[in-house]
Image (cartoon, helix red, strand yellow):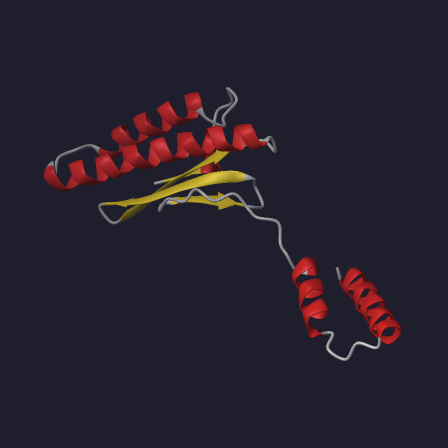
Length: 140
């Protein structure tokens, strides 16, 4: 990126000298904008669903009765698959939010069982590819 910026500045300098231009600031601003545009990471557009860049996966995170419940749904590099897994993550998040509301009403509700059901449903339809989750993928 730095080399591209340097080469661009040298090109602007040569062009300004050749054309006797005094104001090169618009050309420099455009060059900087072109050199420093970062590729966009996927975003869910929803609260509680986040893209984890390093693992290329969607993370669903909701707090229920003071406990942070999270699940990671892996996606491949295929944009269509990333979108499919994002929709599954949103579906799981919605289920966890319903459980969150239900937990306030029904104090005797067994959260562990309900959370396990929601996660199992999400993994059968999302980025598990038929594999069982590793121990570090879930937190309760």
